[in-house]
Image (cartoon, rainbow, N blue to C red):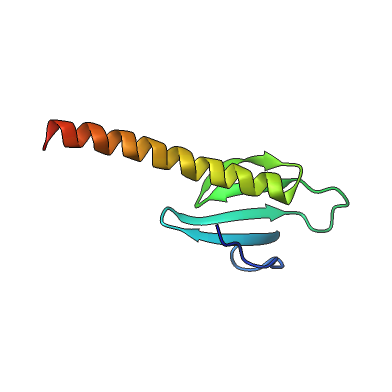
Length: 85
């Protein structure tokens, strides 16, 4: 996954953040940059995926979510193709 450089608060979010474009929409990790020990929230579009104690952990949350969606789509398509060859 290719993440942007850190960005300050702007139109995308009111917090410091990084972005990764995906076929499911933007993955965004944001945090309150003024805090000494911020938590990092992971999002895909408007779906909150969870919170992490580090930026790397938050990236993993996004990565794991996308892999789970991929797994579910493969399973769904395999079943569909067996029903409708």
